[in-house]
Image (cartoon, rainbow, N blue to C red):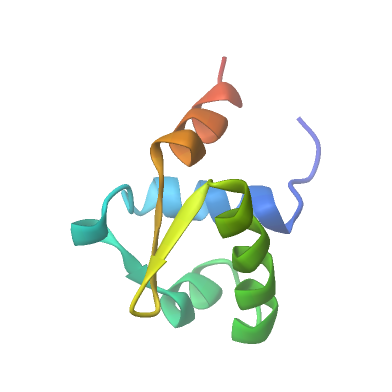
Length: 77
């Protein structure tokens, strides 16, 4: 497995934090700290992931959708 790009790093971080529902969502700033990145960069990548249906944003908190969870789990199969 090669080096993960920013989308994969975000998806994996959300998975590792169990951010898989609105009740378990984490803040965008916490996510940026987890992956050691700037909030602005994370926000830009999140916009793309939201558009693709992999994550959901609610009140500046983010979590994996079922589609995002399936994408993460497919890395392990």
